Length: 239
Image 1 (tube, rainbow, N blue to C red):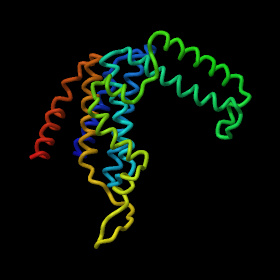
Image 2 (cartoon, rainbow, N blue to C red):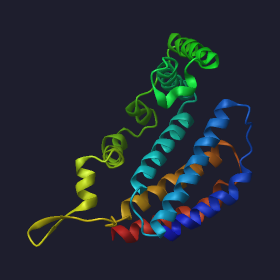
Image 3 (tube, helix red, strand yellow):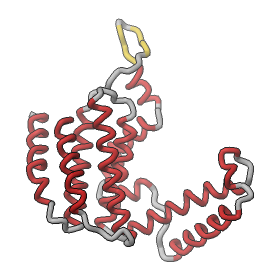
Image 4 (spheres, rainbow, N blue to C red):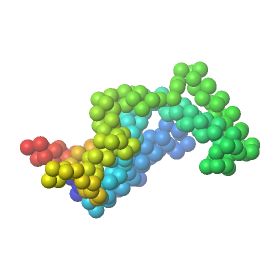
């Protein structure tokens, strides 16, 4: 599956120039940026897995899945962009509000900064305008539901979040082993990458197909052989 991902990524990268879009159009710019994120992070995870370094790949896969979710939700309904913007304003308002107080040394650049205060007022107004128009910041679950991926949120994403946040289950899975009736702590104990590889392959392929179809690149069929190849790999895996 790893070699498949590398081949798929190479093909996807080769066909990027066929995506003709208007970067001045926010919806098009956002869709291509999400696809670019999927391309970059797929390769990063593949490089780590090729080196048999599984630590951190769960966090990359979680980010990959979120990018896929927003891509799918946007393709389903372009109004999803307004929720994404509301979330953008919400987070910046929190950061700027903390910064302009002048009490947090990690945000010292915002203190006594007129530009920061102007941005805070601007973002508050923009968020309020979106609220009045019926758009509010999106919870992660809402994003998955809008993408038609509610089951993935309640399963795969839950597990990936536990891994990314270093929960007890993740720590036990990574570092604790039962050996000769006792528990031992281990380091650099690679996980089985099968599920991660399959997930990356699926996200990269479906996102490539969807993006090329949306932009009418004429290259959608160039992924046909890779689509069929993934089906064969999955069939062989499942017996």
